Image 1 (cartoon, rainbow, N blue to C red):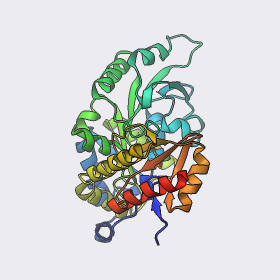
Image 2 (cartoon, rainbow, N blue to C red):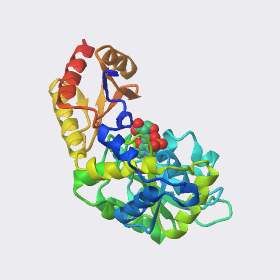
Image 3 (cartoon, rainbow, N blue to C red):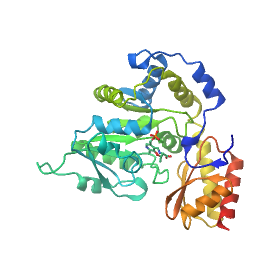
Amino acid sequence: MSQGIDLRSDTVSLPTEAMLAAMMAAELGDDVLGDDPTVQRLEARCAALSGKEAALFVPSGTMANLIAIEVSTRRGDEVLAHEAAHPFHYEAGGAAGLAGIQLRLVPGPRGVMDPDVVAAAIRPEAPHHPRTSLLCVEDTHNRGGGRIQPLENTDALCALARERGLASHLDGARILNAVVASGVPLERRARGFDTVSFCFSKGLGCPVGSILCGDRGRMIRARRMRKMLGGATRQAGLLAAAALYALDHHVDRLAEDHRRAQELAGGLAEAGFALEPPETNILVVAVPSAPAFVERLGQHGVRCFPVADDRLRLVVHLGIDDADVQATLGAFTAARG
Ligand code: TLP
């Protein structure tokens, strides 16, 4: 069963025995007919947690982002997002291909956008231009190495969006990591945004599932869109039960992942590797020729992905223990040769 130490992503985490037991015990119904009590419990709980009126359980973070974009835009609109945003790099072009929008990318250190730069990217009203209708923010920022969005900055971005008539979406795939690391509740982190999504299938250890939260009107449109995309599923309570279990048992423990990420970072820095200090469970490490380095790490039992020619990413999750951290440090030294 063991495939070595798998730091490719927190998405590789497997459901625990207790989570599987919670799934087996779930009360089920046909969710497309509105009959699944477990899905309904999860949606109500997530709406409350995020401070939004309603929530929709979806199969993936990718679908949550696509639907969020779709419900706040019209075809031909422009959506502002950071240049390293997930929908730009890793969602198969769905925002353009399916929501019919064009992304306009905004630079900024480790996924953090300056409100003045965003303001300058908003198009003036004119028949020649696309309408700038949505601003997307990612918290924590994946390619930004798990960076937590500074709250005063997201407040300023949301205020700007509101003032200029843009909607705002928070891609919070790993927002519970930000919540645990910052001590700032989800409702507060998501406060200025029209929609927020988060994932159960990453650090929370569920096999499948994400949630999109927002106002009632948008969530009605979101439900129709989920159906259109083929994402409305039947006895989805089986998966919602895993998510409810994870909200009860796997949120506080994210602090352990953060501690291990710090330990990894400390050990790697001591061994002479350059890295951005991790704020949550993601580390980005500078190495010469990352693809070759990743290959050598694999030979020493550690799996991870390169994210650039000279950088690789390590993601800590509930399948990683203290011994794995020590073994990973050994593998880095060995891989350097
Ligand atoms: N990210 C995955 C890969 O796609 C890169 C990973 O391993 O980190 N938003 C953010 C910020 C994400 O990091 C991800 C997944 C998603 C959305 C999409 O979630 P899924 O994989 O459930 O579609």
